[in-house]
Image 1 (cartoon, rainbow, N blue to C red):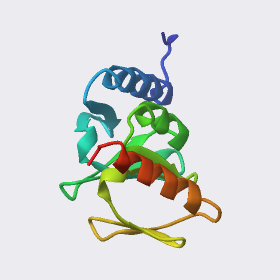
Image 2 (image 1 turned 30 degrees about the vertical axis):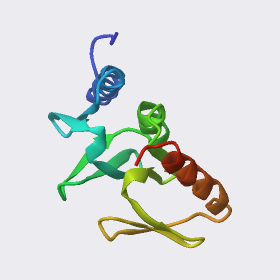
Image 3 (image 1 turned 180 degrees about the vertical axis):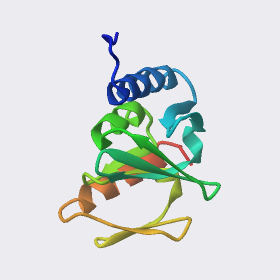
Amino acid sequence: YLVKPVEYDRFESAMNIALADKAKREEALTILSGNDVVKIPFDNIIYVEAQRNYQKIYLTNDRTEITKMSNSKFYEFVQARSEFVRLGVSFILNMKYIQRISGKDIVLTNGKSLPVPRGSYAGLKEKYLEYYSGGNM
């Protein structure tokens, strides 16, 4: 609950938590983007990029949504889904959209290239191979 007088930042944070908790039970993530409540199917999320206290969500339809939330908090909402993996502290990827992984970068199906943090390649490659060998293609 929120104590009056309600500050907008606290309200926004509480709404994000409540909406994301509800989304855990659905096939979509519901977020507060600006003043809008937006429902995003998990399958439409290509990747998420941390930008200070905000998350920029890149979607399959060439749209982006921005929500005020930490990267760690956002990851809590998607980590139970096998297709999502963290890449360092800045990115959360949907492995469905990975086209190529190397020791230097990841190329996504939309052509975007993301850097692989030093020491992360082996673990990422293992998760990717495990994801696809589990019949998730």
